[in-house]
Length: 137
Ligand SMILES: [Zn+2]
Image (cartoon, rainbow, N blue to C red; front, side, top):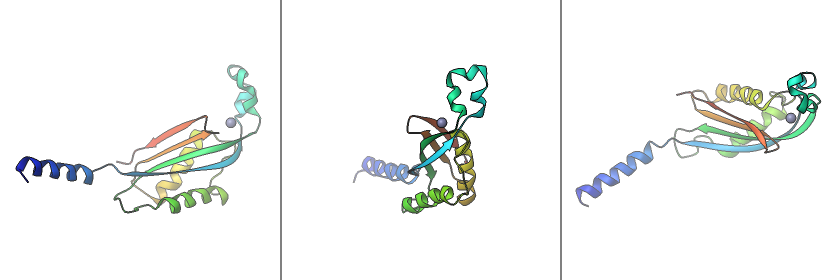
């Protein structure tokens, strides 16, 4: 191998080793929420129906930084842990905005997996939603 080819190969390995690694999981949860201010605020008159409790399928996507490529965090275990936060009542969907839900979820994830960059996307029925990025480093 000539010197140029050797340098190129070393560069590729260096970039690969230093890759910014994240994994992501998705899941869905049924929930009821409302936006009480919408029922009375004049500037929300066109969406006043949001003041009443209504159902969504909330779609979640959680991205989390990992340290290496050999299942630092295993997808299925991570997803199951996230889902049980809602089924066991640690976290509630009800009466919160997608942004509030993402903040609540971040606290739980960061407590279990500290010092990692995390992105959380939560939408109402896959249509409109929030995307929050929590930068640890
Ligand atoms: Zn809604």
